[in-house]
Length: 313
Image (cartoon, rainbow, N blue to C red; front, top):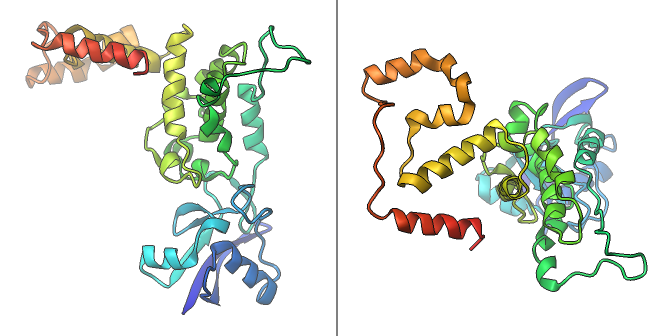
């Protein structure tokens, strides 16, 4: 079977799409197809690769608009998935393209440094004794150690696509969560504070970082865990954390969400700027700020669930 690869090219500011036809071979991956093109058709085609074993993360690209690890993406599976013999290969989104399928990682590493991405051992640890840890504590962050910095999560992140100037890349939040969960680290706030300042509460929760991660990690879940950690570490409040607390307080009090007061609890007097909208809602009978919500009959069960969730049960 002949497969057409439409590859987005970019060289010194010039951009175009170039078609290549390759014969589908047994076990052929996107990476092996790219290598075949470079070795037998066009030596000018540029892309990055290293281990070719799904370990280094260097070969991530987008196929038909979705990030994949090229060395682990079988061509036959993609043809079957998209029901077409024509595949479009492009560089990762939300990166600056340097040439063809090669993207610039330097800005991402600079952003990674903001959350102090190295372990700061507690004072009781020494150079000779090391940083001993129980297997149970290791399991708290073991999964996050499997991140290979492939960039798939960044490429598919809806928030990064909309505006990345006030939001860290998903893998950065995962790195921060790894350190916050590590019982050997002496100061969780050193990693948490930068995360809060750099958009922790601005995640769209689209879950694209999770669904596209080739290693099955969940940056979206890590963001949620970091948010919980801000409460446990009594971090300074923000609009996002105030909004979450307002939700929790309403449900804990009555088992219902009082949307008429949610804005005031979240933003304080700033909500007055939306007074015209509130007035229209009241006239339409959609909101009644004077009405007091009564607790649901099974409110104690709700409170028990909330308490269990706080303890991570």
